[in-house]
Length: 579
Image (cartoon, rainbow, N blue to C red):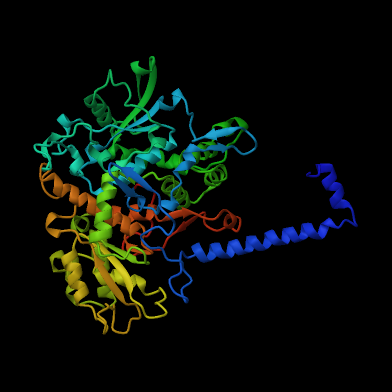
C-alpha cells in the first residue's frame, strides 16, 4: 500500500532510513531521461532535421514520417498527406473534442465557448462570393482572416454561398468542377455516364475547395432563413462599408423560428469587409495587452479576452495564458498562426485531396520521401502592382553597386529602359549562400513553383553546370541544384481569373488542383524561398509555424518555431495570418 502523507514525511525525515538512496536514484533516473529527451528534441527540432552525418538539421520530406491514417471516400480512401498544408501528425483537431481543465481548479472549459443552444446566438456570416475573383492563396488568406475575427469575437463562423441563380460561375464555383459536380445518368450498362446538369447538393463557391471545420461553424445553420434571403444578407454585407461605418461593422438581430424563436446577432461580411475592418478595427484589440486598472476591470480585461480567444483557437490553458501575456506583435500573430495550423483549420475537400495526390505523387516528379527545398517565383500581374517598387529598387541598387549596366540609370526617368521587369531567378538562388553545403557534395532537390516557367527555365539554362548536369549559381559555388518544375500545362494559365468566368469549368478545376498542390509542396518543404509580397508566401509561412517546446519557454526563447524561410526580396515582415 502507498504511505500516507504523514508517513511519507516521517519516512523522508528519518535519518537512518534505507529508502533515501533508492529515492535519489529514482530522481537521478528521471533526470537522465529528461536530459536525453531534451537532447533528442534538440536534434529533432532545433533547426529542424538531419540529412547526412555532417548535417545537424532534421529534414522533412513531403510525406509524413509517421503513419498516416486514411479516410474513406466513396470506393476509395483519401491519404491525408494530400488534404492539408501541414503534415497530418502536426494536426491535433481532437483538442476541440477534449475537456480542457481550467487552471486553479475552476472546473472545465470546453472548446472556448458555451457548447449549448447559445453557441449560435452570435454569428459572423461570411459571404465569400464577392471575393471570388481573387487568387487561390488570396481567398484562403481571407478565409483565415475571417476565422481570426470570428474566434476573437466569440462568434460562430457560418459560410453563406451564393445560390445558383446569383452565382456568376458556370459550375457554381470559382474553383471549377470535379466529376462529382455533375448530375449524371447511365444510358446503357457499362457505358459512360451522361451529364444532365449540375449536382444541386454538391458544395458551391469556396466550400467546394475547403472543409469548414465544425469547431468554427459550431454546426450552426444559416441564421433567420425565414426572414432573410441571400440578397438580404448581401445588402447587409454591402452596408458594412468602412467609409460609412468606420467604428466597426453593424450587427443585425433576427429571430429563428426553427429554434423556438431564439434570436441571433449577426454580422455579415465578405472578403473586402473582412480586410477593411480587421485593419481599422479588430487588429488593435487583438494586439492590446494593457493591464487592468482594477479588479472589476480585470474581469473584462484584454488579458482575459485574449486567454479565451486562444482557447477558441485550440490552445491548452497554459498556452492560452502565455499567449495572453505576449507583447511583441509578431509573436502574437505567429502564436495565433501556430494555433490555427495545429487545429487543422484548413483541410481540403476529399475530391481535391484525391486529385492533388495524383498531381503530386504521379505527375510532379518530386521525390516524396526525401528532403527537398522549394522556391516560389511570383511574377505576372503582381509585379505591375504590389511589387513594382521593389523591382525598381532591386535594379537601382545593383546599378549603384556596379553590378549591372548603366542602362538602368535611365529607367528612373523612363521605366521602359529597365533591363528586366522582374527580380531574376539568381536572386532566389543566392539565398542558399549562407547555408552549409552538403558534406558529400550531393545536389539539393529544389521544386520550383512559378507563373512564369518558360522564362525561369531559360534563366536556369544560362547558369553553369557540373559534369553530372547539376546547376550551379556560379562556377565555384558549392551548392548544386536539381530543379523540379511544376508539371501544370502552361497553356491553361496559372491564375484563378484566367479566362472568362463561363469558360471551361474543367480547366478552372485543373488550375485549382495545381494551385493547391503547389501550396502543399511549398509548405512542406525543408527550406522555402519566396517573398511576402505574394499571398502565396504569406500563406505558406502561416503553416510553417509551430509552438515551441514548453520546457524551452522558461529559458526565454521565442514561443514559436519557424521552419526555415528565406525572403528573396521585398518586405521582411509577414504580418498577421490571413493578411
